[in-house]
Amino acid sequence: MKLDDLYKKDPYGLKHDEKERVLFDGLLELTEFHREHCVEYGRILRLLGYNRNNASSTSDIPCLPVRMFKEYELLSVDRAEVIKTMTSSGTSGQQVSKIFLDRENVKNQTKTLTSIISSYIGKKRLPLLLLDTEMVKKDRSMFSARGAGIIGFTTFGRDVGYALNENMEPDLDRIRSFYEDHGAEPILMFGYTYMIWQFIVRKLEDKGLVFPFKDVVLFHVGGWKKIKDQAVDTAEYNRRVNAAFGGNVRVHNYYGMAEQLGSIFVECEYGHMHCSNYSDVHIRRPEDFSEADKGERGLIELLSLLPTSYPGHALLTEDEGEILGEDDCPCGRCGKYFKIHGRIKGAELRGCSDTYERR
Image 1 (tube, rainbow, N blue to C red):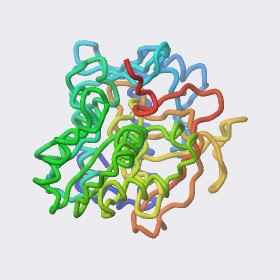
Image 2: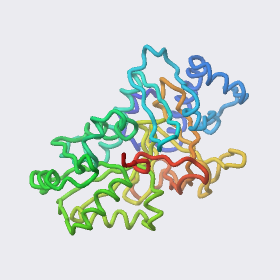
Image 3: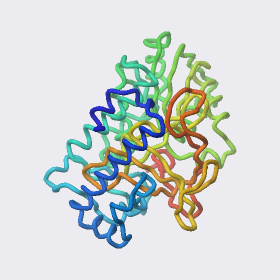
Image 4: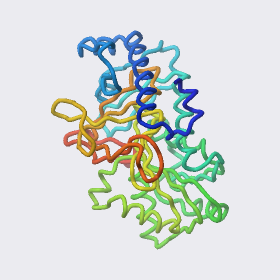
């Protein structure tokens, strides 16, 4: 089944057997394509002793450590076909990943993101309040995964407003204006986890301000390390976001990375991260990289059908997680659902919101 056929289906509609078949065929095809068109990837497969004939499931598809994209420029198309080069977020002095995208890859990322987000908010564009600064789209030094996320979410919004000024302070006049125009109707918000907490929620709390919107869907993404260091868990985070915006906020955290843009994993109403039809996860034991059992902690491996211009279809992350179940979440979505426990010890700090620094 091709991507165009998958886009005609509910993005969480495939159950295990059908999804495994679709993903295995697609990932096997991508593996062969990248082997033939990316010299470095072909060399890696030879070193790993990969044999296509020995692969019988998605678990057998060889995965690259995500850190390799910091060390090498990996692409499977001619550089003349690259229309966008994305970089991952990183603190000062850190290397960043470079992801080379051609027109087909960008198109599929957009269509996939649209399919997933629309399943939560509907197809109608909503007034959009971005919990960030407008400088993120003007300052090219900010244009990494963070900038791409901001621009990506404008697809789903109209009458776009920005909640922070260039000094990363709440722009109260703009927030009030947006509230006066749209406070009584359903709206969409988007931002980065730590930035929402530090520069929006806590600042509004300090000022004793509440903007009681009638109906909000908030999507947020980014690392939790700084927030958890403040002894704030998901329930407390969601509670205080709701308090800042009137108590009618449906909060959806999601997980994703620059190395697989578009293939996001959204947290459902029951707090579970979900795989869509376009992606999947395996959990790997760190001692031998064998596949872990359900409920067993290990390294998260991400699979995606989207990367066609670079070999990013099977990536081993530096995040720890566990599979909670498959096809039986109370929310009704099919596919695996999982929990993220955080970065492994010694891994670089990363994440669009974790890596914000005042300059």
